[in-house]
Amino acid sequence: MALNIVALVVSAISLITSALLVWRQIGAMRDTNELPIIVDLTQEFRKPEFQRDEHYVVSSLAGEHPASLGCSNLPEEARIAVQNVISIFISLGAFVALNIAEERSVVSLFGYRADRAWRALEPYIREERRLRGGDPFARFFEDLVCRTRENAPWPVKYQVRLRQLPEPERAE
Image (cartoon, rainbow, N blue to C red; front, side, top):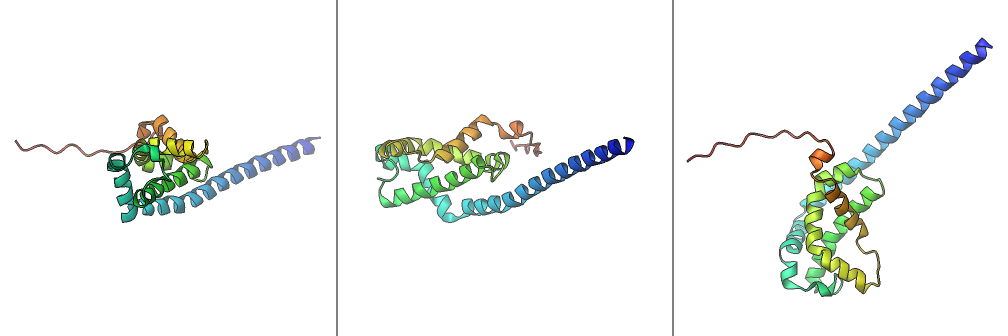
């Protein structure tokens, strides 16, 4: 009887240890998969083409073209810039929504820019959805913006402790 109890305890400890090791391995695999995604997307954000397109979308699009065109009916240069920006944020949003990348990482690194781009593109995206008969166009982008707004300010929400240098003294 005592031998059976010892065997049962050893089996339970082995099962718990195995489960913990599997859990840690899953976490390590996720981190390993996330790093190349974050690095690749950071490189996309640094490309001059993307920076040009993002700047155009945020600062000039609304002044040059009405939102009633949606996204697909914009003139070619504007349409390409808009699609480039939307595509990047759709990818980011999909990675977060599908648990390929951690929300905390993506929102912390790219949330501000996603929100800023969404503010400029929202009327065009909503019109594009209408033109497509209710198609869920750019829903991953919208989800990323929702997560960004829900978790603002992200250093507080995600408990990231950032150090800050003192303000330099101003010369009078």
